[in-house]
Length: 304
Ligand SMILES: [Zn+2]
Image (cartoon, rainbow, N blue to C red; front, side):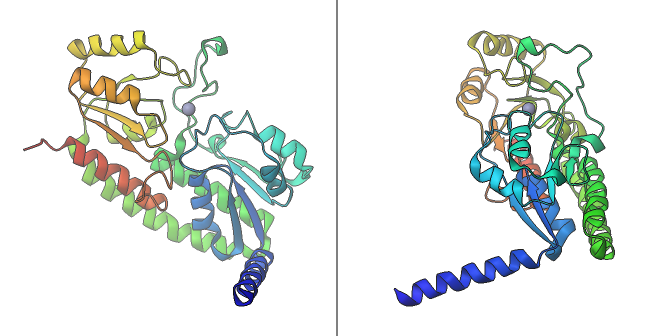
């Protein structure tokens, strides 16, 4: 027991010194940004990820533990486009940390650096739409990831000028590997082109657009509004005129509606990770894309 305790305190000590040695404390709102911060920041950053892949990113709540983490953060790295509107303003405000308020270099909102899809021409929150500024689920566009990586490297160098060359080197390495991987994914996914899908929420829109997969419906009647029986019936009817070949949800969703529709329209239903950690295979940004594409390809293959 004594040995166990001293091992524990040793681990705590090493853990602490590891944290203290890092130049930049990053508070990442979601796992994809935590993964990207590790790619670009390497040993010079200590990354705290505020949420998991199995949480609904629209429904996170401000908690004292998150506020405590934000208090010591040098960089808050979130999606923006109001995805975190329900909790981050509170977390930042309560933290009392001036470095991370919106508009400061210590506050990076990824969506500001990416061309957003589905920007509404008419804002009507009364319909329950949780995407008032456009689709915030940008982690599924490889070009988006690159644009955000570029800005992240600039921010890290601004916050930690001594690490500038280090961050630039890691960005160059990441860019090379990401460009190569993107080409490989595009080749692997040729068989998916034109495959019509029904999604649950509009959280894979960037992925489907990139791979040329038409989205013919969503299980949600509006982004953020749970599937209703009348809307699901419409999707059943629509199958006659505008058929889907696959229903694709993410692993954090309740699969009931997808399973029901799958049985009705005799179309397979699969789940992809919504972000890093959403499936056992999705361990970082690269394997998250690998995993999603291999799951789509496996579902697309005709069953013998
Ligand atoms: Zn959403």
